[in-house]
Amino acid sequence: MLPPLISPKMRLRGLGAALALPMLLAGCAAIPASGPTGGEIRSQVKADTSHLGIALVPVTNVADLPRPVVAAPVFAPDYTPPAPTELVGVGDVLDISIYESGIAVFGRSAPAAGEANFDSAAKAERLPPTRVSDEGTINIPYVGELAVKGRTTAEVEKQIRQSLRGKSQNPQVLVSIREGLTNSVIIGGDVARPGRLVLPTNRESLTDVIALAGGSRGEIKDMAVRVQRAGVNGDFRLSEIMGDPAQDIRIFPADRIALVKAPRSFSVMGAAGKADQIAFAAPQVSLAEAIAQAGGSNPNTGDPRAVFVFRITKGANGEDKPIVYHFNMMQASSLILAQRFAMTDKDVLYIGNAAANQPSKLVQIVSQLFFPLVALQNSGVF
Image (cartoon, rainbow, N blue to C red; front, side, top):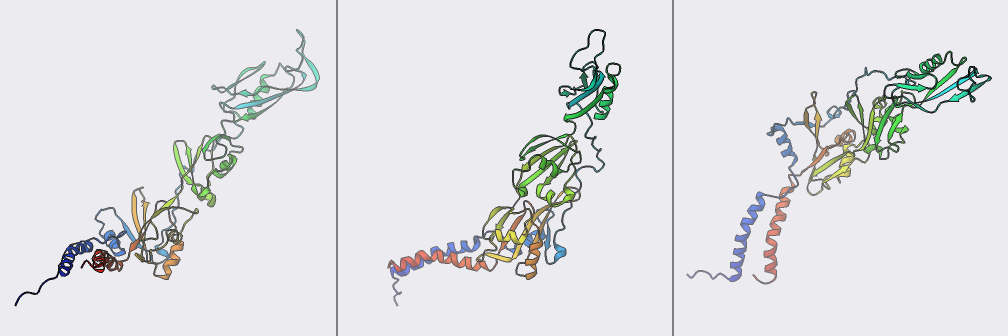
């Protein structure tokens, strides 16, 4: 018998199938995905081939939630108490008033030669603002130079009064600090009135000083505060200071304070509604709120049973300790636990790909490969 004749259409169909087969196999080998599945993440973390010391924590009850981190005191509790507010120091500007009655040295009219200026009415003489020199001294007319550094205003009053003995009859002296550099701090950054700030009582807290400087110009949740004291830096969040009185530390003279805008954020990856870096909308953001801001799990590709939070914490010796928290959001209890799980700055929220979605993706690839052949057949080419 003669072999059956093969029509041109059948030849084209066979050629199309032959060309499509290698493409189909290649598509099966590498199906596009937005990341690993939940099972792949768990197996990789347990294997830990990178030797990062990653810990996997399945969150199934309240005991699995991370404990709130209690920050250790930055500054030593036995810090030297500040000097009293009336202590005089280098650079301070003093207001000095001298009251005289009877024989007066600072009277309006100068006495004649060999006569004392006697006036029964009390007279007050206010000296020009007097700045304490770098050597810690001031200069008083008819007295000369006096060492006042490290003395209180009451001690300076007594010192001037004793120096005027024999020159004035029972003088009374009042000394006050007009500009006190000794009892001041430097505050800068995002505050309304940056610069040198004199502490009125030397008992002011950090929030007191910020308020005296006009307050923060940025949103409280985005502000970081750095306090520099005796070569030691302490970093705080303004929102945490205002929410926890224990962190509202006392400010001492010579402290340097800076307010810096430092928004906190977390990253979203995997099969979420969107991959993005999302800023904290409030001082505290829960995992439930973070998932909602990320658009939740993608209904076509995401697996709500594979919700992970990647975090780097600090160990007892300050070393980095990576940890991965796993939530199965198909369990009702996880919805409650997610509300009590607090996100931290630079967390990574990952939603795993659903393993069941891989066949559907393969079907999509196959349909895309064969669509040109079907179109050619419908057009009459085959």
